[in-house]
Length: 266
Image (cartoon, rainbow, N blue to C red; front, side, top):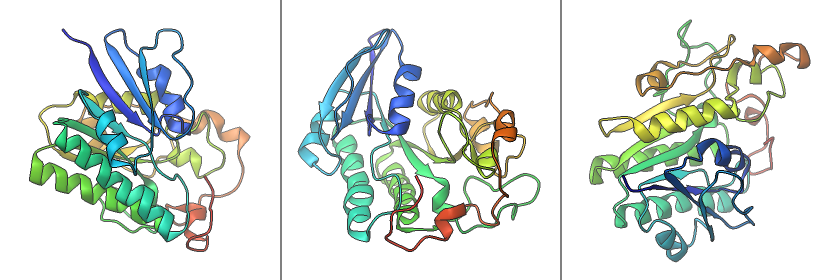
């Protein structure tokens, strides 16, 4: 079997750096794209480093050449001005998807966010949790960009037959920082498990799934993620004694309180 080549945009970002060693495989080459410097290959890694912006069609087209799958993590990861969000997160995502289409890339995973539905009330869907395909209720311009990402993914699946999985990621860090994180945490190991499931699932389709771990205090549904083969193994409850505060009423937490266009929490 030939090696599989997977492009990761935003490879120098927080999630990109966490995923690199976890997605390394002997039969897999990770092509890493970012505008920022990217560390050279570490032990057990087979990487190709590409410097460029997701807003540059030429750079993205070159990065998409001869790849088997695309994991799109690139973009602004917090609130920013409308002009910046539009240029990088919305137009940038369209640029990435179009380059993938022209290159014949069959499978794409898009990093969406809980902030696409941030103004939904915690627990509004009852004991099963908020379904992954709940309609958008964005909490910021950033949240709008993630809703637009999901819509673009749907378009490229329906019109061009591309396999697209959108991950509504909760809070992907080494550990949760607050009480909200006890419900929304996605451990790095579980994030890698979810990405592997999205890269392997058959048959092709368009899917929205929640990206959270198997948290005792979970407030969103894992039914859709489990349907593609994901099984979360980690639980934020192990960190409960280290955080304080109360669970916010709205899913987006502090993002629902900041002024539009002003930098918000990461």
